[in-house]
Length: 189
Image (cartoon, rainbow, N blue to C red):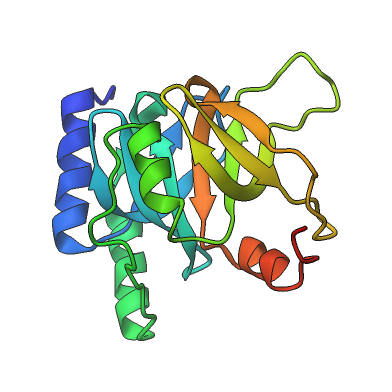
């Protein structure tokens, strides 16, 4: 059965109101794996989720609506909701008024609230490029942003990287990985 955009929106809205988790399938060229989370904000362009991994919240994720091909809140997700409640697993929402109208609005909103963000970007022609940028937002403009990248050893790049909003696929923030990387980083000079 094919699911249409109206059904996707209705399921997401239901899960937002009931603080319930859902499974999201995105286009295969974007991500082969399903996402699990509790939606907290939605616009016509973006969806913000409390990102879940193995019944634990691992930060938040904002994804493009146009990449979603299917959402599900069926028996499995309802059973998982029961586990989350039964185990008293607190699924916090630190961003009640998160702005997700578009990437520029969202990144301006989040730039003063988090230490690091993980950006998944469209792949470039460079074979060394893995499509992931982790760093601290330095500035946002109308069509792009500057981000000071941090490497897996906690070292900062000297110059900011320009990221075009049109190339952003998703943004993950407040994750355990990025928080630990930030905690043990080299001091920014």
